[in-house]
Length: 164
Length: 168
Image (cartoon, rainbow over all chains, first blue to last red; front, side, top):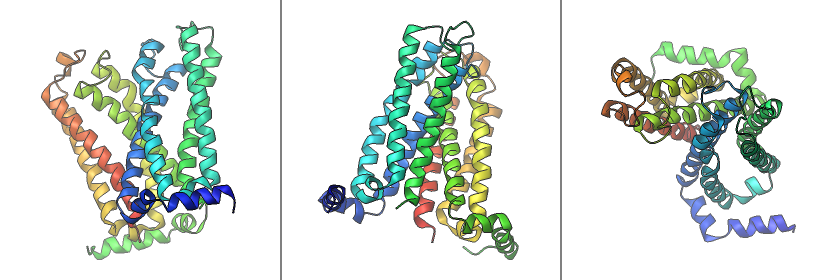
């Protein structure tokens, strides 16, 4: 038996997993919380990205927009991690052996690196996102990349249900 | 719940249209449309909550209410339009089943109530916004409308998710 199969077998026979499997409202409730946390992250990332391009709150400095929305990109990840872990525990093979899940995690890692890149750039260039900024093209690229990645994460998340 | 014959006839017609048949029978159309639907609704709820949190006096307090609404709400409406179109397509693929599903019915009722809440707020609660536009604290009517809005949209997501678990 492959180690991933062994892991899935062990996980789905734990008492926590058995509980998640036997109570029907747990999974839909956890998925609802997961989607709500994604709503916060996706909308917050979108506001930052639109500001970077210059089509949102253009009269407000990037650092103010970032101060308002960046914490809401990072903190809900804890909720997503917790609810994601509950879903994996309830049905390990559905995600751990699923190519859509692997794609989602890869896109997530990339999106977080792009977010860190944005933070690094903002620290070096407080004018970021304004017409005066020297990094106009970079800002637009980061914003476009971020929007594509978060869209991909949401799509891949939905496709997990179709690849089992 | 039994429907009037005219409604049943309409649902049967809708689900027999070529578009509905294609979505039902194709392996990838439904998941693709559903992915766009989830993306759209997630952004609708996420952006509305930005406005609601301001009206509650919890976030974006350094930004005028009217400015924030002008910045955020056009994106909300754009995403809402996408959610309605994709939702309609998904619905058409199994129209009678969705129409008879309790959580689908509940979701539609919640959307109507959310629309009414918003209309009432814009007609009444928001009329004197000039007096409190830039103040962090907002009048009670604005807080109530925002609290109702947040609650309803959270319920819309929950009901939407439950449709997938109860559709037979």
